[in-house]
Amino acid sequence: MDTILILTILIVVGALAFDFINGFHDTANAIATAVSTKALKPRHAIILAAVMNFVGALAFTGVAKTITKDIVDPFSLENGSIVILAALLAAITWNLVTWYYGIPSSSSHALIGSIAGAAIAAAGVSALNYKGFIKIIQALIFSPLLAFVIGFIIYSIFKVVFKNRNLAKTNRNFRSIQIATAALQSFTHGTNDAQKAMGIITMALIVNNYQTSDDIQTWVQVSCATAMGLGTSIGGWKIIKTVGGKIMKIRPVNGVAADLTGAAVIFGATAIHLPVSTTHVISSSILGVGSAHRLKGVKWGTAQRMLITWVITLPISASLAAIFFYILNIFF
Image 1: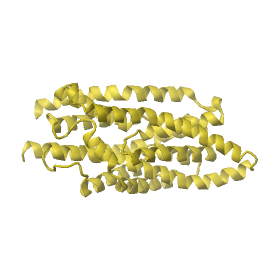
Image 2: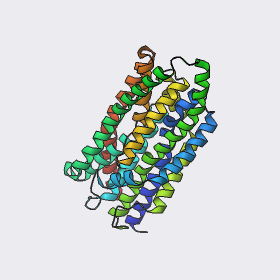
Image 3: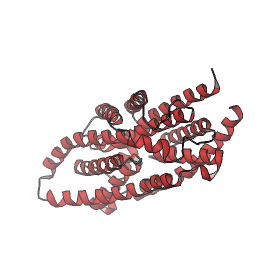
Image 4: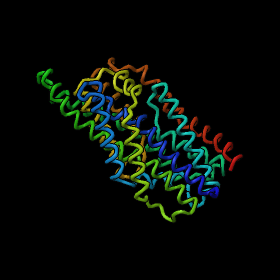
């Protein structure tokens, strides 16, 4: 078996492993509010999320194409296979570390930072596709800010519309609605997050001359959707506890507002083919809703800890990827 084929197989396996880990690492965000308000039992919530993630992953390919060609040019990437494999190893490592400590960090930041770090280690900063890379970074920065603002507005509207309603009855109604909003948010999660692994595999196929376009092959789509669905079925209980309870005390009406906000921002990004951090978007939605509900009710210490993790993920994952690149270069 030649080296190129071995590297391609390793990358496909690594990308599916990343997608699987992404499933139990990030899916917690999509169902955390529904679990914390008891709208869904944990087991039912995870089954719902797994199914909707799988369906969402099969629905679109625009984000996958952005990952394939907008960070680096796969058609001219030097040592492309080693760059991609190093990026996957770094992203997986950081995801597992943050999952172990229950920190809702961003798989998207980890992967994008890792690709950039490995590419720079291979060919210097000129390896980056600056226009595409900056566009992706802008999406990663502005999407949580947008989610915060929209979450604040939606919950403020809810407070006005439902201010004279019976609280117990309203909560019961919103608990039922939250099943639908959790499903919607899980679907949008699949439309954006699962495509990142699809883009990585497609990039590997291009750099190793197994295909000549950025089209996402059906087997790539199905395998990534399946990996994310299976990962989702395991669940990320530590992160569910952080997102669902340590940011603010979530009631059904808060959960519906946060779910609608997260789904709208994520799906909007998917529609214009931009990868965003579902972790950042959903957590920021909850922060926006919490701020509109009662500013003192938000546990800003948790928010600060999350923000620090968000900021350090890109440089740490980039550095890890560079280290993995140099190590892999010894063996291949």
